[in-house]
Length: 190
Picture 1: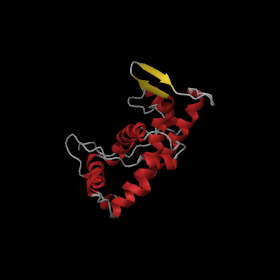
Picture 2 (picture 1 turned 30 degrees about the horizontal axis):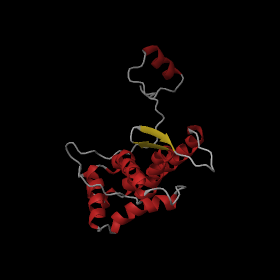
Picture 3 (picture 1 turned 90 degrees about the vertical axis):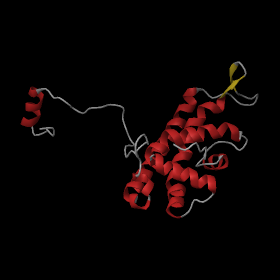
Picture 4 (picture 1 turned 180 degrees about the vertical axis):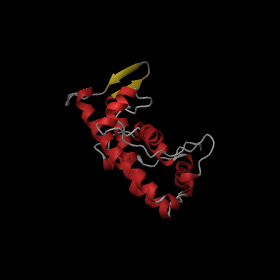
């Protein structure tokens, strides 16, 4: 994987497209944009296409179908995921030898319970845009040769997006259970 630290989304774009205020320090935002790219976007693009976009951003040469991919699909998903990653850290700061909660005299500090719905909503929107990105890449994979050129230890693109964290796949079903399912016409593993 390339050592590029290219960001798909600028701090200004994140401030413009989310509820983050203009006074939030850009240096606080950047790591969470990069984290969102690595965690949520890289697995969908795969190593080669991800590196191609980073290289084009670094050289200022994003154009054609790559500009469409970036502007219409990658950036909207990255914005939402970066926002959800950043929310908890807007309130908490790690300074010198302490972890402090930021607040002002004129406002009450938000609790994690206050922030959780915002994080969930941003993740839901990110998942929506990520699914659009996956669908677009699957429908237009011939336009992006890097999408299918991953080899060796490269990360191959995934088309999985929504998960529930529960695997209900029956690998070795009990024969009585299989006979019961077959009898009621619900067996799809036979």
